Image (cartoon, rainbow, N blue to C red; front, side, top):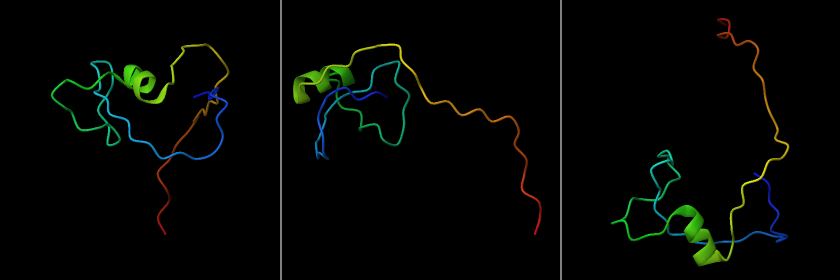
Amino acid sequence: MLDRTGLEGSFDYKLEWSPDEVQLPSPEAPVQTEGNAPSLAGALQQQMGLRLVSQKGPVDLIVVERAEKPAGN
């Protein structure tokens, strides 16, 4: 993720949103509401004044060429 907000420091915030059909459930996802909460992008704009913009850019990539079970002690 690229942060181009220009904001510095740490922030405490509460963001209320409902996952949409393309978002996978995860432990970090909020509890599903009755459907009245906005999507993640909508909540970011409405509640925090931030807008998500899709762009192409460099990303860090880790390639695992081989994995083995550890040897016994």
